[in-house]
Length: 223
Image (cartoon, one colour):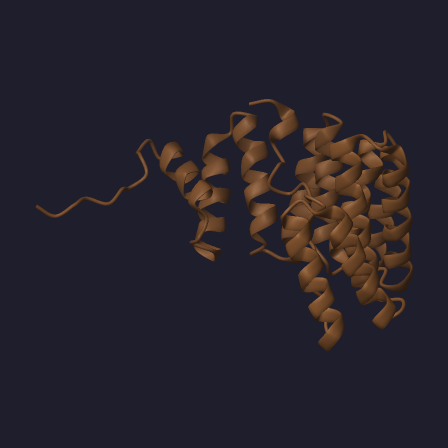
């Protein structure tokens, strides 16, 4: 397995939009999310802007706008959209520094722009502000993995689990790292623990079955 895919489970896909809260704004955000999912990014932007007008300064609106422009930039190769996305992410974090979706999305954007040092500094500052939050450590693990430093990535995941022992993202990511390094026994332990916390993970269940040397159970029709 290539190192570049080990932490796919923890890499933030910056299209996880939020509907926000409060009456009319929620309606506009929900409609924007729907249009986004249909690929109508212009319509999504219009609705997110309307939501922002009804609740100026809303971090969720800024994040949704950033995520939409970010997606457009990646799909259509428009650098101006990437710049706009970054501006909206910063506006979100200026008002809500611990907005987790935005923290992850901005880090992804910076890495995509070959600005990994900035992404690392951003996440390190997030970790400093929130020592009881495992997510900054998981994101630091992703950044280390992307630079081929599997050992440091593992250390950050261990730190995340010291904060939140039942965090399934960290458990699955650690299992992936250990499986890739050939440590099947530890990988099985991590996957099994993640599955015990949340049994609705078919991919993880398949990993456990494979590492146990058995095929995933399938239903049998009655005769």
